[in-house]
Every structure is written in structure tokens, then in C-alpha cells.
Image (cartoon, rainbow, N blue to C red; front, side, top):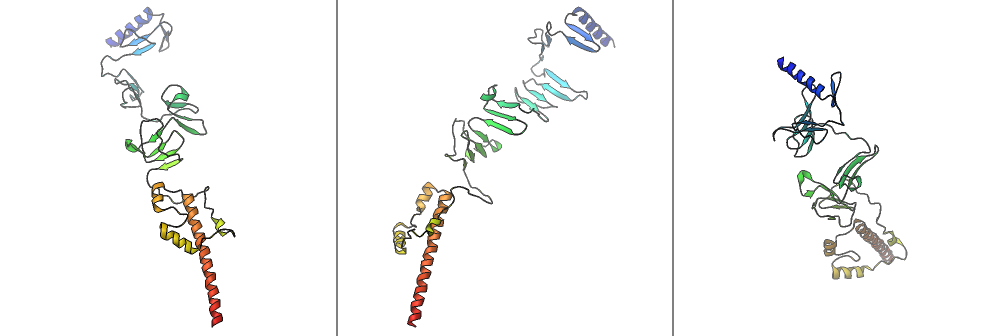
Length: 274
């Protein structure tokens, strides 16, 4: 009780002595911001309010609610935490619960100006945007083989290694490049589709089977079809390959029709002899 009385007396004397800096309204104390800098743990405050810990392990600033739960803490390592009992990285920020940003506001990594950030997240209340410069890698467990890479030229890569080199795009000029196998239920091609129906035109030249036989014996593959070695070295486009295969199927159909006509002709000749 004596300590409480002494503290109140000291506060009263201080308020009277420094009346030009302090004002009292009810139970609230106000500081005159034009004349007073407040220092806690320091006698030479360099701002309106400066809090300094007395030891290297002491947290300089803590805010608690009425239940004694820590809601804001400035740690001795320079980090700041929002929430109860979080340990942020050095000079970092740790948030225990939700983090809310208003629409049309952005969060960026890099310089402080909006257009120069290397990575930026924002939302305009209708659409969300992630703006990035050069490559954006999604790494599983910090693996150097990226599960997904958004390249700086607007293309996508899957399963490629990551580097720190600017302009290192692994997509080889394609919009989507996959370094590995793909499994799916359906693929629909809407451009570069097979168009081999010209085989059925009257003026289409169908090579005699004897010439096809000679070509196969010499080259070990069908005419107008690349060899297996060429496929292995250059690969192939699905649309072009489907076109070649469909053309051969249609030519084979014409050969079968020709053969059937020849069989019918021979049967007629045999029927005349009999």
C-alpha cells in the first residue's frame, strides 16, 4: 500500500512538474507530440516513442489482452510476432492466425515501388493476380527439381531443374514442356488435326504395290514415313504423325478396294471358263 501511494505521489509530482508535456483527461494520460519524446529503457529517444531492452535476451515490447494473452511482441532477435508465443526468424514477421488485406492492395517482394517488385500478389475484388519477373518455381520440399515452373516468357515447365540464372527457360519454345511422363484420360487437339482425305480424290497418285515393295526392301520403312532413327533423334509432332498414319490407312483401304476388284474380275473370268 505504501509503495502504491509513493508511486501515485511521484506520478502526480511528475505531471505537475512537466505540465507542458502531459495532460490528464479522466483516467487517460496524453503526451504533447510537439514537445515530448518518450524513451523506455533509454534516456535519449530518437522518435516519439522508443523502447529499448536492457539485456540482449529481453524482449523490448509486448502487448497483451485482458486475459494475459500475448497479441504483439517485438523479440530480442529483431523479429516481430502477431499472436501468442510465436518465434519469428531474425528480423522477420510471424503471424499466428489469419492475415487479411483489403482489395486493390498488394504485397510485394523486392523494391518498395509497385512496378519494380520481383513478385507481387494482389486482388481487385473480382480477379486475383500473381505478378512475377523471370521464373517462378514451385518446389516440393525445397527440391531443386521444380514440380512446376512459370517461366518469364509466359510458358510452363514441369519437372525441370531450377537455377538462379536470369532467362534460363527450359521450355524449348513451347508453351508447355514436361520433363517426364504424362497420364490423362483424354486429349483433344483442335488445331493441326489430320487432313488426309485428299487421298480419296480422283487425281491422287497411288503408288503401285511393286514400287512400295521395292522402297521397303531398300529403306526398311514405309514411303513418306520417317525412319525409326529419325524419330529417335528428332521426335515427332502428334498432329503430323496422325496425318501420316491416317494417309497410310486410307492408301491401304484403296489397295484393298483394288485387290477386291481384281478378285471379282478373276471370279467372273473363272465362271466363264466353267
